[in-house]
Amino acid sequence: MAGWRILSIVVACLVLFVVLEMMRRRKLREKYAGVWLVLAIGVVVLALVPQAADFLARVTGVQTPSNFVFLLAGVVLALVALHLSTEVGHLEEEVRTSVEEIALLRCELADAQRELEERVAALEARTATPDTVKGLPEVSPARAR
Image (cartoon, rainbow, N blue to C red; front, side, top):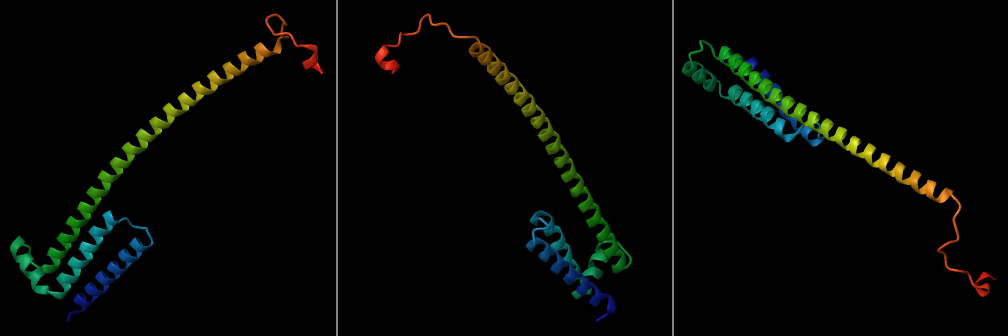
């Protein structure tokens, strides 16, 4: 086996191990792990079956299989960058929506606090004045003891 094939297999196996370990530790979500797993398996296949790289290079019109692998790596990286860009866009939208909702909830909370303070102030103003006895039932002397 050529040295580059052995190196490719070792690197691909290392990538598989790292991806699986990151998934196990919940550092990498399954959504993103799939791309890396497929990529590592593809590298292993191309390393184990060099005729596949030769065939794909001839079909696509690339002169050497190594150039085809570099082209494939560039395409994969471009797709990963595109996918991550769309994810960032979605996350920015979610953050903006969350910030707007928090701002609205803060306004509602401030209104509720203001209303509560007004009600407490009105109640305190009403109870701070001395009560008049008019309209209250009379207390019998037997109950007063």
